[in-house]
Image 1 (cartoon, rainbow, N blue to C red):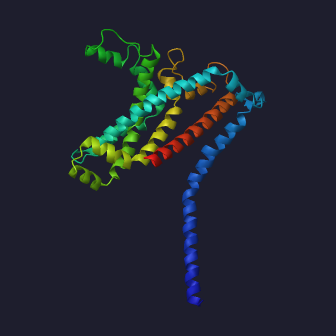
Image 2 (cartoon, helix red, strand yellow):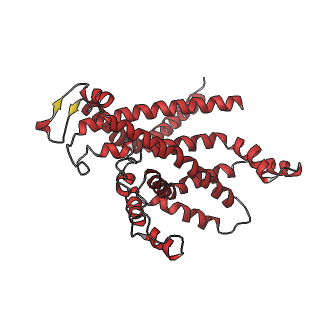
Image 3 (cartoon, rainbow, N blue to C red):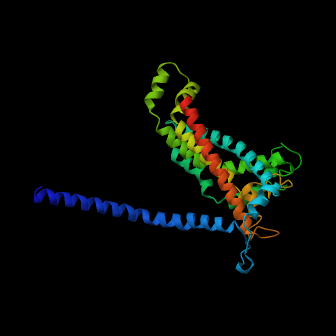
Length: 311
């Protein structure tokens, strides 16, 4: 190899090394953030799950597997909260995705003007904290709140309705607020997925005499299947963790029947607990919830892959 070739190879290697260093420098800050705000809290939580810990180091006591044994043998309210969580999720997610897909389909129509403005309007609630949304909807659905006032003014009801009197009435109110807060994100996802579908497919379908419903069922849904599967999984897992919103809106009314897992775990944390503070027990609950979420996610992906292969 000549000196010129060796020099070119050396410059090429030097250029690759610089590119590699540049990539790692760009990734350094996200990696540090991931280690500090994800990995460290996870390890801390796993450690504290084996302790009785109320935030005071001198009162910290090692209890081994007692927290986990209590969860599986005595803590019946925790498993009831899981049932309420799944009920909330199984109703809310399909409603939210159907609304988001419908809005995204309308906004994908080229004849609509000002689509960017409408997308921004639908996305604005996503920027609000769930705490703020919880306070808004708590006041909206109170006995003398805005909802009852509007319904009385238009003549639909003669006296105020107690929206938190029954479980399913409360659940409906909670779902309405949570859908309003999160639908904007899914509208963006669906809009992007619809934009990636080749227009030639629709043109060929229309030439063959296919209607809008047929093209939606035969073309739109199959082509956006992978994206739809991901959106469904993210929505499902995100809804399973809802807690502060329920706490501020209904506080589990009536009688704790709408208490979700996320809200239940708040009962053991400072600032939320009305009884015994035990962050060790809350950490153990979080470990169980995380494991169940991982199993749910893995099962969903397997089922999705199986359905895709059968299609």
